[in-house]
Image (cartoon, rainbow, N blue to C red; front, top):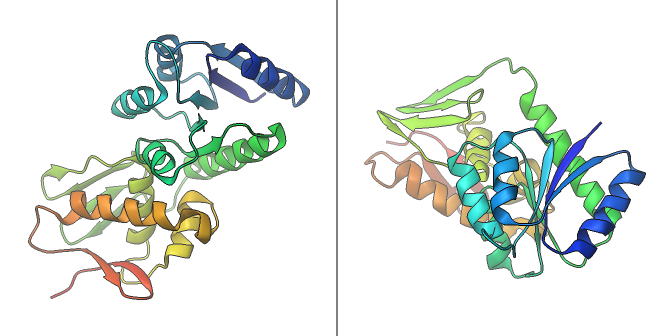
Amino acid sequence: MTSILLIEQQSSVAAYLARGCAAQGIALDVAHDGAAGLRLLLEGRHDLALLDANLPAKDGWTILELANRGCNRTPVLFLTALGGVEQCVRALELGADDYIVKPFFFGELLARIRVILRRHERAAAPRHQALFALADLRVDMLNRRASRGADRLELAPKEFGVLSWLIQRAGEVQSRAVLSEQVWEMPAESAANIVEVAIRRLRVKLDGPHRAKLLHTVRGAGYVLEVRE
């Protein structure tokens, strides 16, 4: 049985989701404040967490940041009443796997939950190759770690997703549409800005302090990870 953690202060929303989950045979645990929610999230006992942005004790943004620092492996779907691109990008860059704007229909939420769970099932499946290297860049797929030389790269989950996709296809140009679909599982028109922000932040962490640049933009085509003279 799928087990979901809901971190949500509004009892009406919690009751609505409890009814929907019960009908789908999904076990739902509820935390009504951020402190309790963070504690349960870090225990790692749930298949997925639904995290509201506005919470007492600790808000959703703080929980995402602290969970990311604590190497949280539970996927998070962010619930927000703020539908602006900046807020959605912020949630994704802090470690959320997806977001949905309130109010929403349970059917849409359920579809997003299933997509995230399928994605994580694939990520947890055994890989034929776990380690990739390019110049002094090392990417460990199994432990989701990356480094350049002696320096470990502190990457948000989606930044690591972009890097892992690119290094497995080093030398091949990858369009924004491909990255949108493969890393975010979203249509290109919905994730264009998000991809650009993720690439920009990844480039700063990956290439910023290094003389040799590995992440390149191919005008009108996309992005490529390769060694250039």
